[in-house]
Image 1 (cartoon, rainbow, N blue to C red):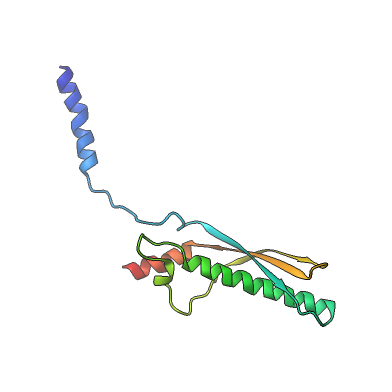
Image 2: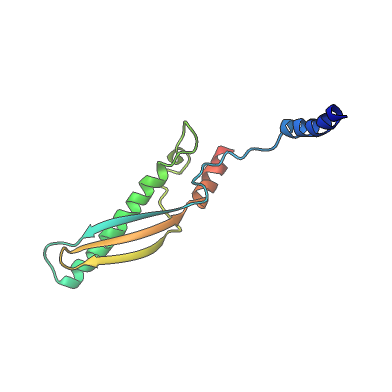
Length: 129
């Protein structure tokens, strides 16, 4: 009786283990949000307002460049990176500026941006097919 009961429980477990379930080979980052900070400085000459505007723009450009490099270097699998699937002229889009802070004493501005990675994964997924 004990053996029959054991087999009664064991056979469905074996069959469940043998069933073919579709595997999704998505990387761990596919639904994350990437956040980066860029730093920029204004020119040494000019009025303070222009210096700060130029520093803010430089910080945003720095953050976007950093974001692009970071996204392109994300691993897709053990052999490829995201850059292998993106168009050559790809640039970050869908990002949001989280904060802009300027330090008047040093003239530096810091811009933090974030971008969801799911649209990037969608591009990769379409190219993999």
